Image 1: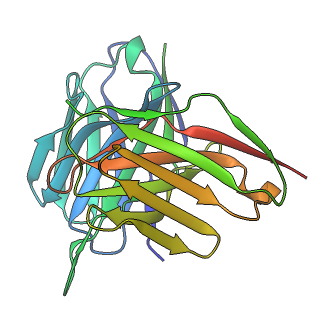
Image 2: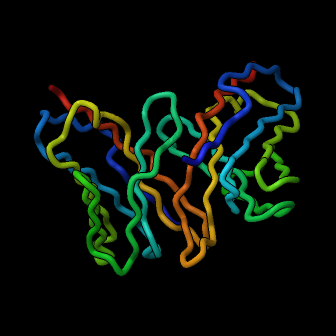
Length: 117
Length: 111
């Protein structure tokens, strides 16, 4: 089974702090994603990566950056946390190019509930 | 830009009945569409993917339809059980391997 783990389930940070959220997947997946989920808004894509050191902005990248130095690890960085970044953060991975097919299904981690005070 | 509409009101049904959830989109027809299940406090779990050239897909008690003319997908759970109670998310291809998600519909199945 694919396993996607996130470094923390709950995190409380102060306004202005630099915050690191870590995500690790153990299935050699090509693609990794960071979303935030807010009530009534669904999942919104922050950044995604299709290869090591490659990244693309999603729909709401402002205030965030990412790092993918190794294939299995994708980090989300909040440069200077603000209260409007209080949210549930979900990491996901997808296989991408398989032997005879392209796989789009995403496997999600358990989420990190971040509170910025 | 593409918008996804899922019924924000919860769906309440009796055990044993068929639950039908709707996903409508507003712009271009996506190359594929996915359905996920999400339980409270957990990440979504993939259920089914249907491609634009497929009308219907089944997996055990689950059935998904995809009507590109109506710009709609229907997700059915037959013989529903209380364990099926969860939020169900619709997700559309948004270019390459990028996906956009709907806000989800909450399903409650009463015993």
